[in-house]
Amino acid sequence: MHRIKLFSLPVFFICALLFPHRSAADQPDSLLILMQSELNREMIELKKTSLPPYYIDFRVNESEETEIRSSFGSITKTRSDKKRILNTRVKIGDYSFDNSHAGSKTNMGRLSGFSIPMMLPYENSADAIRFSLWESTQANYKLAKEVFTSLKSSPVDSTDENRSVADFSKETPSQYYAPPIEPLERTFNKSGWEEKIKNFSKLFLVDKNIISGNVFLQINRERKYFVSTEGSSVVQNQTYCQLMIDGSIRADDGDVLPLYKTYFVLTPADFPTDDVILKDIHELISKLEKIRNAPLADPYTGPAILNARASGVFFHEIFGHRIEGHRMKDESDGQTFSGKLNELVLPKSINVIFDPTVSTYEKFSLNGSYAYDDEGIKSQRVEVVEKGILKNFLMSRTPLNGFLKSNGHGRTAAGGTPVSRQSNMFIETSDPLSDADLRKMLIKECKKQNKEYGYMFEDVEGGFTNTGRYIPNAFNIFPTEVYRIYVDGRPDELVRGVDLIGTPLTMFAGIKAAGDKKEIFAGICGAESGGVPVTAISPSIFVNHIETQRKVKASVEPSLIEKPAPADK
Image (cartoon, rainbow, N blue to C red):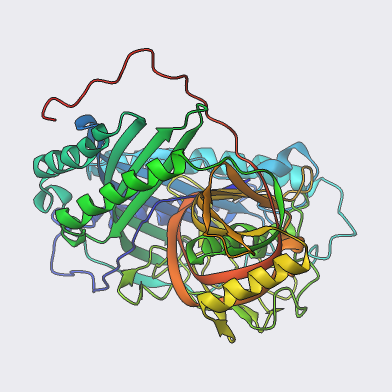
């Protein structure tokens, strides 16, 4: 199961040369030197074993994070944290067959390619770091050896079209170095921001029906190190700041209804002014009251418009996960697009591109950007769908039949093992229509299907999808703002309690048109290698057939005692 959540995380990289004039003692990246020297030493020693590795890499995620949470005008949590997480990947065998081999039905098959993460000392104590690197390699070598031995003795699946494809692609080693960024405590006024977000969340006290009013600030700076026995050495920076505002209100029937507003910037100084944020919170509170009084929607099938942000989540969930290349080698995956290369999978007017090399779109920073992926491969633009025809997959260093090289999409969160994942997704159309034209198409299709109304999905919280074959291959999108558009000209009607559900191929077939305005949905996508930052840039789309179900009701009993009035009211 894969889930995207409404978070906005930017990525920022700076490239420069290593500083050769500094000594090892004051070298800002003495960690890199320790990683390289210990990796070389361990590889030499392990070459003497009966089952020597042919490849090892070290990956360290060094993060500095500050988090502040406020509810109804009071700080509920504040923390600052520094940590380093180490992953050591050991490969035994050779590029054609190693301990990452997929498709095995043995008990060890589920551990193929897995590496054991561990914490690394944050201080650059040479002895402590070398010991930790050695300890990690020991544990991962033993696991790799056990898995490889099991896989070699397991039966060969003669029906697997990828059985003759290598387990690990041969790639050109990469060299990339970004200098350290300034420590967060030098640039961030924590006490000032605590006071600021208390004032933001205090606004939710004004309405007696509001049951939660929270403001969440997260500032993260991550430095990522990667070295391998192939000769790769990549050091890059990733920063993000997000300010998330969420409020929920209780309807008369007890249903709890949430709304969200998220701001995403590179530095705290880039957030909107306080006046802008306060205005947005007032608008969110006003919208909560409208949703509280909105009717509860019934299950529905029929035409719908997915406005641009909702469309971005739609494409991420039902399309993006299904073109992540490693899934085509996974026997437990539904493999929706296996065998569909060079076939029409979307309307002829639609192109789908993934491009982590682009860091901005118009005035917005994109959080699915990076210089190199988590396997040390340079990021690349990948045209997945051209004129509706499937042309490519997102590839890590796990090759497929016909796709033998990585295209820079091997990604993971700290502590995970890289697999092919999404980055910045761009949905483009060669035949854009205005909002008015999309609306006309919706009404026309409603009349054709004898529907009293169609749906317009204005905004969403997120969603999830299942790509496996053992439970239904389906998706669920969580809308927060949904309207009925009536064919008889009545005003649009806000409704509540709607979940957008379905199966992928049916939904793809229902896409008939796309709009002329694009919006950005940025989030953290959760899958088997953990949460990674992604962005979807998409226009609105018209679909001639969608299905909804009633949302799970989060019921809250009416208050026995009236909520206290704010002291300064």
